[in-house]
Length: 372
Ligand code: UD1
Image (cartoon, rainbow, N blue to C red; front, side, top):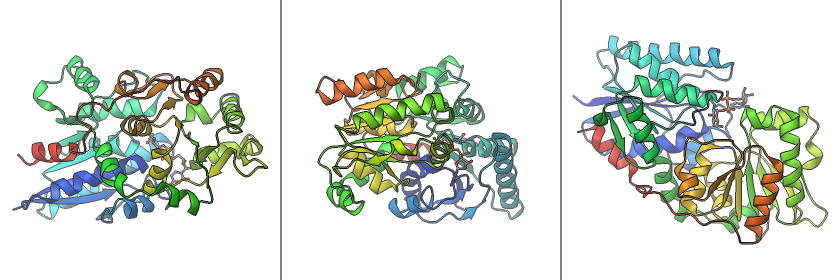
């Protein structure tokens, strides 16, 4: 009888991590995967477009939980995943294991549902720690790791964190980065010039910014100075800004729309764009001069692409991107952002290297352990 692996996704950054894993697992004849989408992200630009871009099959089960406070969203996923697992037991087709990726609310809630029903949990992207519990993702990471008995780790700091937390070394596997598997697989198919033209952005050189963390976007005193610096630098180097729905609402609420525009010359400015799918976004990031972001994944993608990344966070759970890669932590310090953008533009910014095992084969290594 085939072993059934439940594979849980919920929010935008989960999809590109699960896609290579599904493919690697499905190469095994005695394995069946059930793709469960919690519905944490539901807008087509935050969800459907990724399934098309990543050539990923549609979810087998969609839980439709939607947005809510942390407690409510977590509770809805917990209840819905528990129901899926119980129904599988009742039908005599129990899950062999549940696989969760990343650090979003869906990751933690699904892991909790499984652990309570004694379905073993594997966590992909385990061990990362920002040591900042004001970040909801840090709580999600800690709880998920405690519940999982197989911990797949993307960088050495994660192995060390798990060791310090007392986890037996047999449970931790340094396997590399599944998100970089996806990036390396799709990079040869990306056509930046064509994408830019289609988006009406025929620039030779540009930067890309993404911002969505509550700590950067929820207070006008923080968001306004950051956007002001970007608008100012945008006059020299156009800055493309695909905007997350949360950030878009705040920009309207705080009356900051006037900072976002193409300047009169049609070639510069801080230029607003809708959220982009995976391929369009990779087309932009892979040919950008600089990336400015508060995203976790983009710190890693910039490092893999060798593109300077100014990270608008005071800390990171991905220290390898700073120590070996191209990222620098800027916090939400607008003056430091201006200075570092100056360094990039004048060619004084550091160069990085791609961390060990970020070679496009992480999913294969994980599948080998899961199916052993
Ligand atoms: C979530 C993750 C974050 C991840 C980010 C990537 C948690 C705690 N946060 O943050 O780690 O980096 O996804 O995007 O899990 N919304 C829409 N359409 C959608 C989904 C959300 O408009 O399809 C709006 C809603 O107003 C919602 C808000 O965005 O309330 C926040 O969505 P939520 O999923 O709670 O968190 P994100 O900020 O997206």
